[in-house]
Image (cartoon, rainbow, N blue to C red; front, top):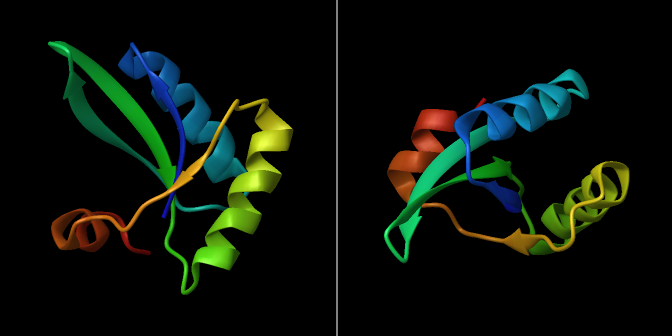
Length: 84
């Protein structure tokens, strides 16, 4: 999967996720806590190869102006919950 961006509010993450879904990508939100603060991460997946994930990530990064993307291997339960 590709991590595209992290947001401080769920609303921001939901807005971006909806825009990406409208482009027919499997976008979803995960939550994490860093330094005592909750963050909402927008991810897109899932891909067979790292190269495929990077290509999609770069395309979406250019389209939406994300500063950096990262490729992740989601935990099994995350993948199962969001696989389409």
